[in-house]
Amino acid sequence: MTTTTAAPASRQKSKGSRSAFVTKHFGVLSISLVFVVLFVFFSVQADAFLSVDNLVNVLRQIAPTVIVAMAMTFVITTGQIDLSVGSVLGLSAAALGLWASSGSAVLALLLVLVLGLGIGLLTGALTAYGRLQSFIVTLAALTAVRGVALLVTEGYSAPIEAPVITALGQAKFLGLYVPTWIAIGVVLLAWYVFGKTRLGRYVVAVGSNAESLRRAGVDIRKIRMAVLGMTGIAAALAGILTAARLSSGSPNSGTMFELEVITAVVLGGTSLMGGRGSIIGSAIGALTLGIISNGLVLLGVDVYWVPIVQGIILVVAILLNSKIFSRFAGNAA
Image (cartoon, rainbow, N blue to C red; front, top):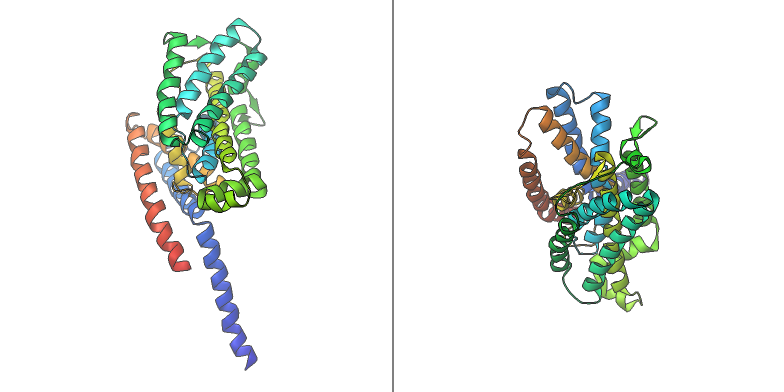
């Protein structure tokens, strides 16, 4: 009698555990499925897609998006957004070209990272302490920072010849380009901070219940400012890698880059309302966008269709994020 009643209870518990797991990781599982389907599709339809050289190049090209998507996951999880990352990337690339040609290459790299961090902290301070919406502040920064980049360069690209810098974008290690290894390191660091540290827990709490966290004695303004500082320095690093790969710092680099980053993060299951985020999901989302761009080009699709496809994907991702996930979670509960 005891055995027959215990068995159904055990099965029910197991079913509940699986349901809870799927609910918790729904975003990652869904984007992983999309990634696999697209990977198989392009592998069959495009002969060159599965070549080692092509896949290695895709990983290098998508590295800046992966890096900034890691920081953007923190920002969006707190309920904010950063629209300035593309412009910061462009200014960083241009500044690197100018500073590297007139002085120490290593010093130029450090100054660019400080520049990106400074812009991020400034927008963060205006948002957190100035009580302004991050959307408005970073939208203004998107225009102003791009304008500064064009002003200081007069619209021209600055060539980069320093081997220390070009190696960051063109050198290989164990078969992969340096930007890929840097992106892998950033993903691992972001995963640890987001899931294993107090800061990560605070980031989720700010997005889900900021008032309770404030009453617990945590200064949520510092958290909000810090995560925008993260996107600033991440965008600067992305600008360095982009300029290093092209051996040129262009003020026009990173145009519409913010759309690609936000799409990757939302695709990965991070909620635009805040309170829920996934580092691994964002990384897979960025990789998905990378193979879409690469696959469409290999299939002979006009390159101008790529941003159109990405825009459509963003709308669909937001729809799935706000509708299907909440319904799925409600049914599981």
